[in-house]
Image (cartoon, rainbow, N blue to C red; front, top):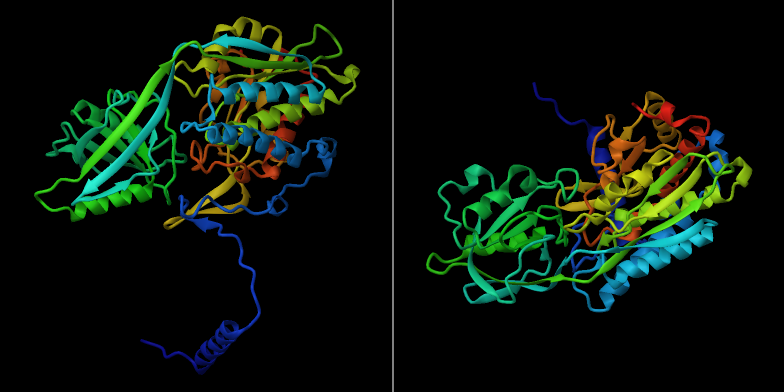
Amino acid sequence: MKTRPSLFYFLFLWLLSIDASAQTNSTTTITPYPAACIAPSEQTAGLDFTADSSYLRFSNSTNEIYESIDGLRMKRLVEEQAGIAQRYKAAGNKYWGRIIGTDSDHETAEWMMAQLRGTGAENVRIDPISLPPQWFPEDWKVTVTSNGTTADLTSAWPAYGSPGTTKNEIEVELIDVGLGMATDFIGRDVQGKAVVIHSIPTSSTIFNSARSNGALRRADEQGAAAILLVLELPGNLQTAFYNVGTSIPVLSIGAEDGELLQELLANSSPDEAVTIHLRLDVSMAEGLSTSNVRGEIPAASPNAERVIIVAHRDAYFEGASDNASGVATALELMRFFGQKPKEQRTHSIEVIGTPGHHNLARTGHTWLYDNRASILDNTALIINAEHTAHALIDRFGPELCSTNSIGPFSWRINGSSKLMEITLQAFDDFGIPRWTETGGPTGEIATIFNLAPSIVLMHAGVLLHTNIETAEAIPAASLVATTRAYAKIIDRINNLSYSELSSN
């Protein structure tokens, strides 16, 4: 049986219409809110984020001793590291960030040394590292032509380690194979063509469907001339992928550029193929060097066990979360413990600002493993300060949306049940959102994670390795939560020995 709307219902609708009309005709100027939801591109720029004061916070009066750990000070450190990357870009470097072996790497090292001295750290130094030949994309350009019309794919970005085109431009037919599943290749001839593969991010940009389903390998093995990997996130982001291990050029492109290619393919005439013009100039630079940045806050006893904080310094683009946030956390921890009277320091606190793993040799991983004997000697705990802060980014239809919440973290703990209890309680005390169960990557300390009691707390969201992972995306509230939790963990293990912290 159908029911009729009541008279009250129609009256309610009429009142709403009057209110809407009044608002429309009002002369009052309404200040618009920031465009929190947007499809980021060259035309729209990046996301707008709420003020630091608006982020949700977790209050606990029992943790007042950690209030000197300052989120806004750490955010300034993030901004200064972002500035180093931006200066390197402004100097004319198309492939930019805090890239290992470059001027931006050396400037970051000098900057971190100065910051460490300002925290009160002692024995601040640089450990030089000679680098093997380094992969560098010097220049690249991708254009598409269809029915006499040519357009640039402005979001194109080379995947790390991708082969180049040996200083020549290749001109090849374009073909789209969807997600690149095995069934997508059935009956498709990709030999000698530029293959478009659409990849769906799974929690973050570098963890995506093309990586997990073997699409890149499939296209390479079937004779493709090049691969354009469309990251299916709103907008037209530039994204830096890790080494994809192919024998052909691979470049990522944004969703808007991918949509353009689909439109051209759908509307192309049967007798005229859509073609791609691609040039990727790559060199292997020799004779470069990098470094670790070291410093320590000594304990009361010269024989005291150590807590080592590892924070890799390198980054793609501004790399505000990955890993300017981690470096800021490491520096603030050194400041906090450096202000304690020496007689109250049970552990020495040491920092290693490594050159990172965003390179073919995975230099940071390799150095930590090769020097594991000295690193692990008398070490009670290793903390990997990596991706320690980020705003929560949501997705709504064709847009990305910033929020006033802290982004969630994956976590790993290698150690005893007591270390697990202390760590998770500290995370809870400071309201750190995280996966219910342990998991996720171990990051820079991957090669030594299982060799000593270790803690990893890491955010790897949708902006990771993109050109809009900017300092604005890093809330002071998130930096505070992680850094205060780490400080409390270090305090809580003061009366515990290595054997009590270790799972062995």
